[in-house]
Image 1 (cartoon, helix red, strand yellow):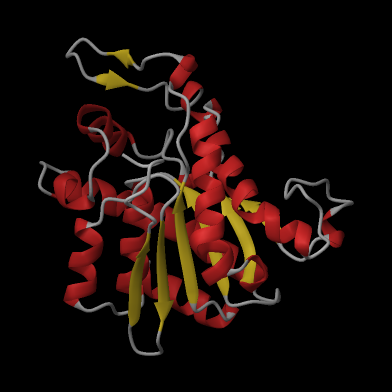
Image 2 (cartoon, rainbow, N blue to C red):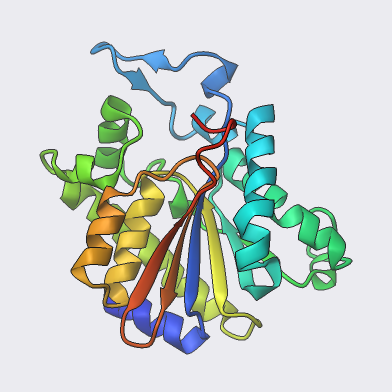
Length: 255
């Protein structure tokens, strides 16, 4: 799949991809996560988890990220498209990071428009369902439920962990190929994806391998713990790629 992904991105003129983890969100049902029989927190991955909105703190985090790095270093108009998972907290993060520049450029203040409105926007939005693992990566869901947020290194060390997250990433890569083909004619060289840690890290791993990352870059991503409203920026250099972690920590809005 990595070869297909590299070819599709090259054909579409995409040389930079940004993975943004959603900002701070309310727990399922607005309360504490449910506990399984083994005492670990569990999600209703296909329903409750998709509906979690951003908290006030999350909205503040998104505003800080927009000013500190997304608006300044990425820029909404460099994007061929902005892409979100189906989860509310991811789409809200996308909207908030794009909001200020949309107003400055005279675009619609909301990036979530009707088809009739879409022509008035310089950058469109797409849904990539696999960015949220519900129903497609049961082994990854199980490992996450038991172990919580952690870098890929922790999951790779578990029995079947590396295989599970690699299989998940191949599903995402397949959808990314379809997306690249669809948006090839749009202006810009960037696509920004809004989703969920550690699942974004897994997708990013598939990408950097497609772009011939060196071992140091692979290790950097393996160890990277992506925080709320933080980003992974990957740029293709023609022979390999670079990776940068976008964060404003230490900051009072982040633990």
